[in-house]
Length: 420
Ligand code: UD1
Picture 1 (cartoon, rainbow, N blue to C red):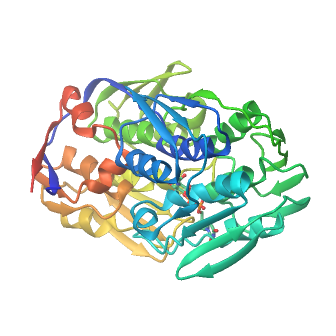
Picture 2 (picture 1 turned 180 degrees about the vertical axis):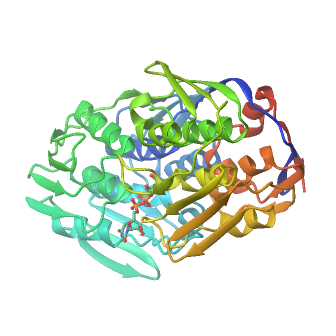
Picture 3 (picture 1 turned 135 degrees about the vertical axis):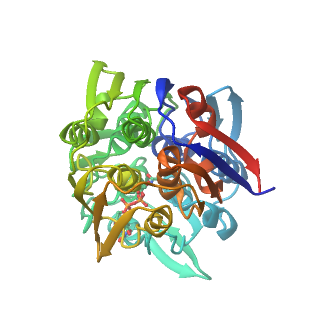
């Protein structure tokens, strides 16, 4: 596959309407969830992303039949043929570890490569494994793979040492066919976790405390298929809100979930960006006032999402005065900063905190994307930078943003995809 880049000629002001896609981080675990049952499961509003293709190919290799009709996928796993997700698959996408829980629940065994580190940090899965062990699983590490077996889920209380999104989901899925109560405390409450818990209930599991940080699940052997519409992608929505603000634009975002965007909305309003809630799925963002600096600290939901940090750093470079951004979730998530500095941004890093002095004029430059959200932050910077910005290695971007150039161009961005 030829490497592709995105070229942006700036500056431009974004104006118009944009439609937000289904959430990648809900779609991926929902796909893994279909391994739990032999019945067909229908998932609607699936975004067209590389990560979805990666998950489809892993599931296919395990025995899942996949039928695609536009943005609707129907997945049926009449029988699990294989219980091994090899390193070639897991390496491409860490979320592959989401097949561990359902494979254990359905077949009593799973072998999945350890994901290793990635650009934004070490990212171990020890908390997933500890949760499985508490339920009675036997876990060994062989040749870099997790080899897990689980005969019967036993009653237990699991205390997550840290809030983990996929760890919470994996634990729920592993417990979903057992008959003993599994209590999970210090759970993640991200909307994607809540959607998974709701669907598990629809499939026949019993869960107390859905949406809270303490859930007790009693599974059900006779777990059923489901039909679901994936929740809107709150990170994609936040990225477009930041794009409207950084270009002093006027944008209407359709198909969002306003409730999931509260922390981003609060920061934008504090910066003096106009955010109007037109209805619970539609937001208008207008930036026609001088913007004010703010301090942002990432935190588990309902705090400010780490996945929106990089995009807001770009935005804050264009705000008069000094802002700070503190990253508390991942230890190495400032890879976008040196690239933004090359474009003229004034940012200092001290440990996990950035100090941003605005508003430094940005100039177009060739820059390199290092991870998914860092790529989006470089696109935002390119929209306001004078001259041409070339963002290379955009395969990261294609993992998580559906047709970004096709969504930005009608809003007034001069943006195109080229073969490098
Ligand atoms: C998910 C999201 C990702 C987002 C992240 C934090 C998906 C597919 N991905 O990733 O986009 O950035 O939540 O909101 O939903 N940790 C451990 N041990 C573990 C698990 C996690 O130490 O076993 C640490 C991580 O290294 C990190 C923190 O806990 O520092 C939170 O990570 P976690 O919530 O698990 O992230 P993911 O679920 O991988």
